[in-house]
Length: 420
Ligand SMILES: [Zn+2]
Ligand SMILES: [Zn+2]
Image (cartoon, rainbow, N blue to C red):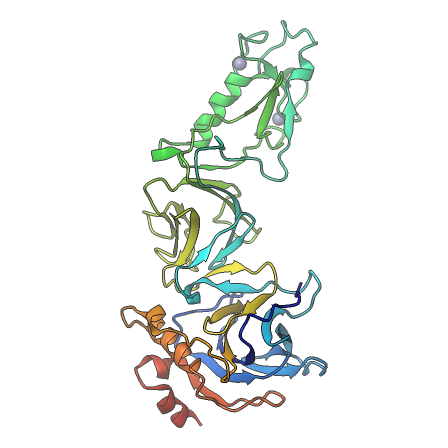
């Protein structure tokens, strides 16, 4: 929620908003390399709702009725001299706001446990970030629906004449109890822990990658289809059913958030050690998290460990790397952010009060090779420089161009002149 702000923050008089809408409507994607983006610019002086209608974006007053067919994207909220970006409606059903990682000034996004990131059409939840070996922490493998089973409760029963369904030998072995890991009953109810582990090892292929990185997925019984538990209780001890390698910190655990439509992806956990390496996500063979999908670039994004932080960076991917915003975000003067809502990306730059010594955005943030992406970033930065384009008054567009004209090297003024 928005709390009262201290007086130390420089006042913001308006927000410069640049919207870019992809003409196609495909899986809520935005093509950062597209040449047919519809671009608009607004100067927003007070709280407003940003609405999309087709490819048109407009700003509406907070209490105005939404235009017919309009899709409320988000709200800009003015509070005590500052502007915040928030969801269109306070309810949970309101759509998530996705922060565009490539447009974050400086060094990408510092990940936190619980973050949801989106690459192309694929979502991952950051389950665990372990920075150092101090606490002896290892990956928590449990997925939400796989419970813990108890082997101990069966100990009272005499199982000396009971068969293991895999090896067909009678009775528990030494340190190798007979367990009931699934819903199977009768003569196939019991299995040796060791026999089941051997079978799982063959299926999961937890290969010998350096520093104990692996992909864990829950396996189901082939007969009753029940998912095997992640952990078993053996007396007082809890141990993973699957014998996983020891993972060298710093490491990250990412959960694949699989929807039914995404048949390429398997539900599971990527456990990846960042000791001496950078985690690569992409379509290419060298990726640590490999996703074979057209919405994923060859090297789409990276996660690296630096000075105690896990940092997510986008690698100029075609369909972008996004992080779900967990709460309203303050627009700080001098630091622009971009938010993607389906096929629209909105860039926000708070305009500092001219009477206040606000810091202008630095071009050094945009240093780079001169690709279309750099051009785009540069153009956004130039727009932020405060050469005022007038104010909105109910949603009038003040300036417009298309990205492809800007990307061919003409100045913003040229493009505006041609388009108007
Ligand atoms: Zn057995
Ligand atoms: Zn079964």
